[in-house]
Image (cartoon, rainbow, N blue to C red; front, side, top):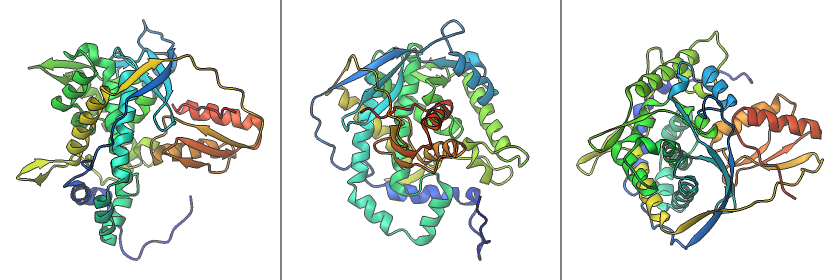
Length: 394
């Protein structure tokens, strides 16, 4: 790590200014975040390829999943973890390859969730008012955002929030049998009304959602009360214990830093992390939050798109062998944010590969491998961190 001279003035501590960051994000978000004109929806037909996932323990977890639970999710009990039975791959309406796991409702949830994500990302990209408000931020606010969040700009932060909402829906679809909901629309609305999106932001530690999503797992169980679903008591206890373990690890200088605990290490002693998007603010004589705005709009968009997208299985040819060349373009469908790009850069760097180029929109990675052997070892190392690698098809 490069050494840097100490700043002339002390930089704000993350923990001291999170309320201020929450206020900045809220004022950027309202009024009107994601409320600009929706894209005209054409009828679509999206094909996917499905493959079964190997299971052990009576069909609950695969060997790789069980190892991850016991080593990386301690003290989460394995019995609390539900695993998807199938994994699918498909190309979305932008031609980008995707991979996801499915529950009893099948491929429709992840495929349509992806299309809802793309629509909301397009709204962010075309939000002139958000661009104007961001440009008017004082330099102190820009520095504070950059110091406090993994993503560097407000648009990137909101993009990540939309993606997290989609992952929340897809993962909790694994548990639909534990709910009173009968189809994808009922599930999405029910999770929103029950506050599950809020519960994920509150109780899950930073990084848990993305890592378990990539592995097709959810460390939770649901109970129904008065027509709404809630986390079971053992789920709340386990999530709290895992979050505390991550916090303790991140703040112990004698231990190797965890990628998912990078933000926790900057908290003041005794300070508990808070979701910036969840901090409520007063708006229109009521209280709301950025998280509520994003989750509600995502659910609304997902339900609307269900009526316009046909999701069907298809037979897809196996990928052709990758040619033995140095420069390689490949896709990582479950790469979603700058944390993912740093992880991939690190594992490839350990093999002597120069920092790759990334495109988070198309999920493409460009890397220069010294040899075919290093390329394959690099792909295996990326997969070992829970990501999918789709080699280039010629």
